[in-house]
Image (cartoon, rainbow, N blue to C red; front, side, top):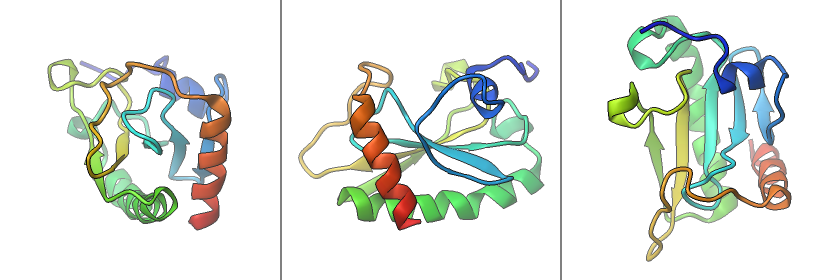
Length: 138
């Protein structure tokens, strides 16, 4: 399958749809997941157009991974999470629902189960506060 430039993340990157931005540069957009699996669930979305890891330009991957690590460190610090899950899905059978390469950073808390993907929408005020706190920690 090929990349569809009308996917929701492409629209967010183009400024056509809003998001809770944590950070943005010429490589990627970092934003809060509005349907989080845990408090602080954050997405890192490369700006280079690719459907997923399978068709991504290796140079784009090389450029974005240091940012994924920086965000992970800041996210764990801000949320006080006990651990952090990095997830990335490739094609629908593997769980991909938005067909633009992106990385999930999901805080994990001892004794707390992760929520189901896209099961409930988070509070916008809480997402805005988390975005500001994570941004300040970068």
